Length: 307
Ligand code: FAD
Image (tube, rainbow, N blue to C red):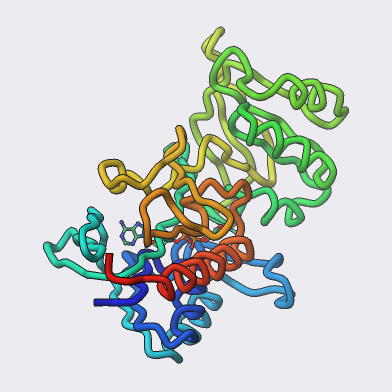
C-alpha cells in the first residue's frame, strides 16, 4: 500500500512525487507517458530561473529528479477507475490494481486540435496552442487565432501587443466570447475577426508555417492568409473522463474541483495541474500545484487512522 500514489507524470505529478518522497512517504507514480505535455513542447522560455530550455530536456531533468528519490515510477500504465473503501484503489487498464492511503491526481489535459492537413506537421513550427508560452516567438509577425470563444479572443488581445497583426477565425457566425472581450478586440487596430470561417489547411515551406487556407462558409469561397504563426484555441480538454463514476467532483468542463490544499471531494484524494479547476495552465503553476497537493496529502496522512 502506497502512502501517496500519484497518477500522472507531468510537471504536477513529478513535483507531487518529489514532495511526498522528501517527507519519507512511500510514494508511487503511475503515468501513461512520463513528462506529459512537456514532451510535446519545443522551446520553453517561461520556466523561471531557466532562461531557455526544451521540452524533452526538461522531461529528462524531471525524471532524473524524481528517480533520485525512492519513488516507484510505473510508466506506460493508464488508470481507469478509482474506488474507496478502507483504502483507495486505482484500477489500471491492464487489469492491475494499486492501493494507496492517499492519491494525487495529475492527469493533465490536452489541447483540442483542428485535425486539418498540415497542423500536426507544423506543430511547434508555427502551429501553437499556448499564447503565454509562444506569443513572444512571433514578435512583429502576422498570426492567426483559431476560435472565437473566451480563450481565442483573450489570446487575440494578448498577442496584439506583441505581434504585427492577429486574424481571428471563428467557425460559427457569432463569437462565443464575453461581450467585454469582443468590444476590446474590435477596438484594436491590428486585430481582424472573420466569422463563418472554416480552416481547411495549414500551409508551410517544409520548415515553418507560411499561412493557412480557410473557406468562407457563407459563400463557399476559399481564401489564403499569409502567416508566421497559428494559435489554435478551440478548447483544452481535461484528462478526467475516467473519473466520471468515481465520486470525485468535476466542474461542468470536466475539471477536478479542488480546494486551496488541492483536496478533491473524495477524502484522501488530491489533485493538481491542468486537470483541475486552476485557472491558468502552465508548467510552473502545475509544479506549484503538485507541491500543494502533496503537502495537502501529507496533512491528511498525519491524521489518517485507517478509515
Ligand atoms: P500534463 O503535462 O498534461 O501531464 C499529464 C500526465 O498524466 C502525463 O504523464 C500523462 O501521460 C498522464 N496521464 C493522463 N491520463 C492518464 C491516465 N488515465 N492514467 C495514467 N496517466 C495518465 N507551459 C509553460 O509553462 N511554458 C511553455 O512554454 C509551454 N508550452 C507548451 C507547449 C505545448 C505544445 C503544450 C501542449 C503545452 C505547453 N505548456 C507550456 C503547458 C504545460 O505543458 C502544461 O501546463 C503542463 O504540462 C501541465 O502539467 P500537468 O502535470 O498538469 O499535466
